Image 1 (spheres, one colour):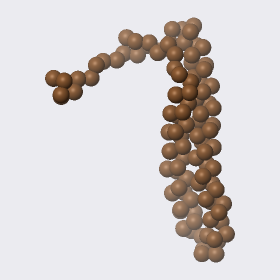
Image 2 (image 1 turned 90 degrees about the vertical axis):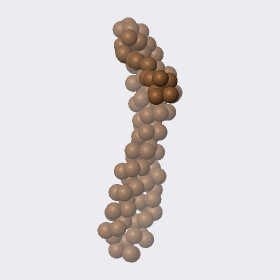
Image 3 (image 1 turned 135 degrees about the vertical axis):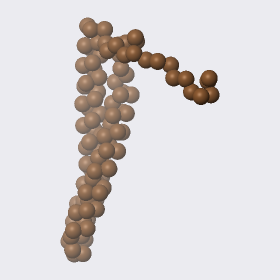
Image 4 (image 1 turned 60 degrees about the horizontal axis):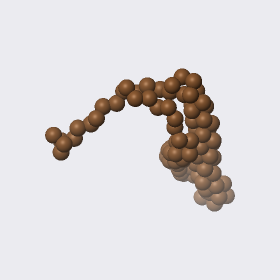
Length: 100
């Protein structure tokens, strides 16, 4: 068994923020295209800028909030790990076909 005694706050927050930004893009882009597809040509011209802003801002908002909450969670974990010793994890060495 090995223990995770501390997690680097910035690396964890950056990774999770990037993941959430990607997930938000996967959701917002098809949603926006679907909504714009339901509009008439005149409506599309009227609402396209707002949806374009939505496609940009939603993933950024998801990334920023994910970064902040992950950073807070990691700080809380690091404090709790001091008292409890951290999470015990069992790991094994992976043997690839090349190593055999």
